[in-house]
Amino acid sequence: MTELFPPSRTAALEKLSAFVPKAARDYTAQRNYDRGPGQHDNVSTLSPYLRHRLLTEAEVLDAVLGRYSLSSADKFVQEVFWRTYWKGWLEMRPAVWGGYQQGLLRAWDQVQSQSGLRSEWEAACRGETEIDCFNHWARELVDTGYLHNHARMWFASIWIFTLRLPWELGADFFLRHLFDGDPASNTLSWRWVAGLQTQGKNYVARASNISKYTEGRFSPLYQLTSNPEPLDGPPHPPRMDAPVGDTLDPSKPSVLVLHEDDLSPGWLFDLGLKPLATATLDATGQISPLHVAPKVKAFKSAIMADCTTRWSGSLGPLTSGLTTAQEIEDWAGATGAVQIVTPYVPVGPAATVLNYIRALPVIRPLRAYDRRAWPRCSAGFFKFKAKIPELVGAMRGLQPV
Image (cartoon, rainbow, N blue to C red):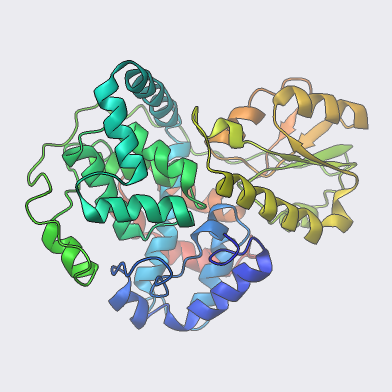
């Protein structure tokens, strides 16, 4: 973990600085190549930091666009906005996350009751199938906490259509092992591969594509299902309005809860927040009904500690590692606060905990970046993509929050 993804904002900024010169022509030409563990310098590898907002999207975009025009860095800028798009899409359809969780529990029940399925699932997770490239990616994921995006697509397609395993178990395998595991990006990307997100259109891994973009390291000829049908699923739930966030009244006695979805809380202090005390939320227990990789837990804990150390002068007394709504209510009540303030928490494990708080109002301010982008995520990505120049222009006129 510490070698590939040192858990600090300083390390994240160093990665960003090293990548910026490669963010235009080099990235566009080389981004699809998966050269294996330790050889991913053709992509930014910033995703573990962006996922937790140790770096913000606005900071990354501003650094790249400070050197290149939008047209020159278009491919990289789009990749940053894919993450934004997935989050906005899921915020307007949170039932999709609930459906994934229910499907995961059903699949896990099947694993426990069907010995054949269990042995196939275990072999896939251990990288002990008959498909060498798949085995390599399974082991790389477990060993490093990271996979190239192209490898993730191939892996998911093979899991679903060749190994014929429940897609929810594959999405869960990723969430339990990826340092950048994100409820929106991960869930919706697996659904997209399966043909559930863009309904009726799936992503099929092909041996020729794998051979080309692994530069011949792998060539799984005749091993992959060639023309699988997309999975069937229910229609998308009705779209809700995009969230706008709560208005913060900093004059009210407040406490702050920090969570893994936003570890750059300075923008709240700029709004006038002076918390009586601060607590950190550990929501890793909500990621999966199965065992979350110790490396993932350690990474999340370390970047949270980095955040609280950097902002120690603004947090007040610190309580670390609360895990339930009841613990947060008891802690907040003892401080004399009349409200709990937390950066807006998107659909996922942290929101699952915070949504159960009843004893005090929970004030969730929303960053300007999200407030502008998320309402535009109502349809497909290509409609959203047309709005990127407008969103970039607005962002660069804002404080980078």
